[in-house]
Image 1 (cartoon, helix red, strand yellow):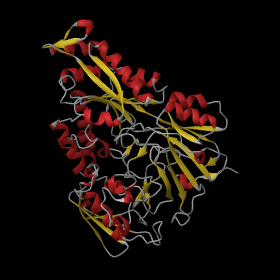
Image 2 (cartoon, one colour):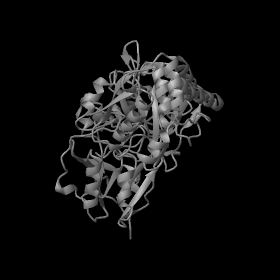
Image 3 (cartoon, one colour):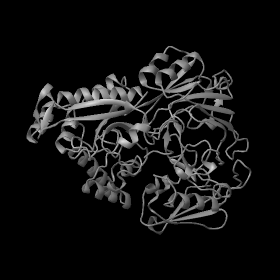
Image 4 (cartoon, helix red, strand yellow):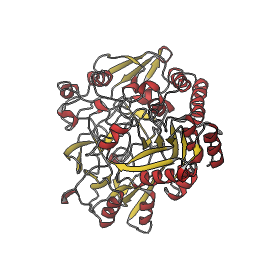
Length: 528
């Protein structure tokens, strides 16, 4: 779903924001007043810095550039390409002309061969990239001289240009290594505004400005991302001055509202929290239980109490203000409906009010990543609502190392969401053939109606047909829920007020490194 698989140092998490066992960064990461350096506290770190394995695939990597990039309004703009692509053959051919004079940070020039190498390696089944299906439309990619790249598609794919924000890597370095195990994964070379200075796993990543960046040398010369998995610890260190900025839950961000030296940024997002309902589990795989849980949950209460209003109820994977949102699927808590559904299916009230059927209690475990207070609070609220319907949800915290092998059978308080075209997020979340493929389709959802609609949405270039397809997907998810969608959460950041030109984008689930007010860090200007 989201790009650049993120995970904590101690875990194997991807899409979900995980927890790292981290020690405090060294003294050299402390916040300060220098306008040319910044220290940011984030909850997780990448497991790799190689785009070949998924890092930065949705753009905004500080180490790399794609052919295209997105501006503050998520509109596509040229990056390594000198212009938007020329589209021909009824949407089957995309031609990109490369920008002149671009060099990798080792001084070697960018050529079309680097672009071809990057895409071919990602598409190679031997490369461990779980986002490969996102490039399924590509039939061929070839160089046309040193400065032009031509993509030929298998079928018209309306949002293809948005996929070409994929970062480009140097063939002369990465091409000599195994993409899965090579040193490039931790010691990358790119064309971006920053270069990696050091990486202490589980602790911090330090970047320095690329003085030869084609877009102009950044004014912020040093950036440190401190890996601090615990929300409270990040807030404490920000308050003490050890950090210049941090990603924070809304309730902790609110504690800085009277701090005139800091500024809060609230970014709207596609990032949702949901409970996976694995089909292999006899309880979560039961259709009536799934429908009852959907009816029992009080989404608005979660927004009001857990998110302090910084979010919206989630009635499906797309937020209510998205133009692709299916009108009329909004629904309030309805415990009477939950009871009717369970009664009809033979789930009868038993000991302690927990329902049972054929000797099986309506009881299952819900896992959430340790240290994530927002997910913990969602999990506890979900369990409380479920109990009102006679379903027992046993909430349990764990590291991602523990959660990952249990995902097939146990429910997980998960986070997903991709900005841009609906194909970007819905296909990997729901398509049946992706079940069990890393963190894709975590619930192992299998619905023929949804698969057909997703295919239509992906393969059609007709906007009306695509709109109808994604409308079908959302309505089918109400009838046959594989997840209980809870909330779309705002991303809240607090940052020392020492720079100008800070903005936020509408963000995907993945945030911390690529998103936030530092999505265009290279454009920051020190306050005068």
